[in-house]
Length: 95
Image (spheres, one colour):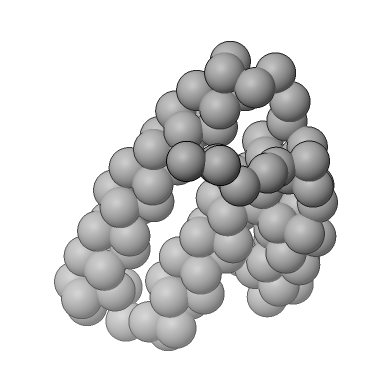
C-alpha cells in the first residue's frame, strides 16, 4: 500500500467536509474515517499477527457505519421537511 493514499483520502474528506451540501459532508466524514483506519493498520508494521490494530479497525468500521447511517437518515428527514440541502440556509427553530 502506498503511503500517499491515507493522506490523500484524509485531505479529500476535509475538502468534502467543508462543503455546504449535507451529503458531501457525510461522505467527507466517511472518507476521513477510512483514512484513519488505513493509518492505524499501516502503523502495525510488518507484524501481521498482532490482533489489536485489526480489532480497533473493525470496531471503528462498525461505529463509522452506524454514524454514517444516522447522518444520512437525519439529512434525508431534514431535506424532506424543508426541501433544501444547503447547510448555509439552515435556520434556528423558532420554538
